[in-house]
Length: 194
Image (cartoon, rainbow, N blue to C red; front, side, top):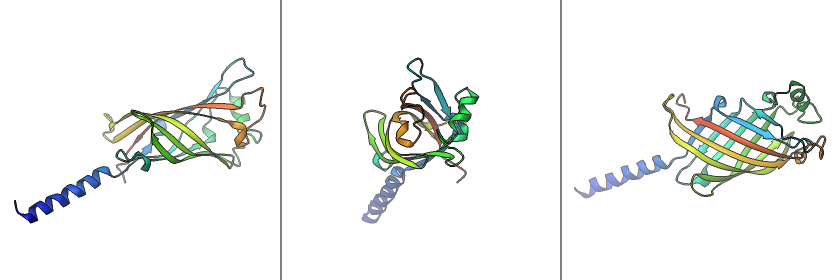
């Protein structure tokens, strides 16, 4: 093997390594994604609600997790507490004011490994045009080819909590709890149509 062959092999290996390490963008699958939120109700119970039809992307860099990113939009119109009257009330101005602010958004600002398959995802949560930092405690469930779609896919669970009053959604605090606990599950896949 001469010098030219060695040099060419090194270049090919270098390009392959860079290509392999390139961050991968996954598109969130809204049919397998849910955001469940709970709150305290006068100390008697802990009701829950759910948002669906969630849109967004998850960019993953396995080699350098700090280069990863999450960008999510949650339509308030998808809210479901299993109580129709409550759903309608939550969309009104004393809560989400959904006619004026139709979406909740989350954009990550930092991704940090936190143990095996665990990450702390810090980001900006925006509700009613108020933006505050929150931290998601995320767990990577699986990263592989999906057996049904054959697309490269990824799945996470995550939790967070925050005071709703900080976002201008403080009606009936403290009788109805201020702290909201959120549990998220999501699947996302590479969009092969791009």
